[in-house]
Image (cartoon, rainbow, N blue to C red; front, top):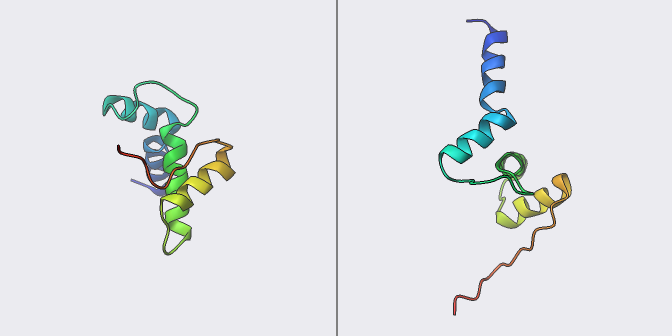
Length: 80
């Protein structure tokens, strides 16, 4: 197995279509929405690989800046 074949296999595993299909099979995502699993994974990988102490707020900021997703972020939820 040469380097080109390995690169092609990695690209196939991380392709948008494959990731969306895996999310549907795992029932993580039932239908396509404005924010897809691919965008969420890209933002999480980017944030966690570039920051030493990343948190959910940093991933949220990455989603907003990279994918122009207007997602409301609430730090604490009212459980009552």
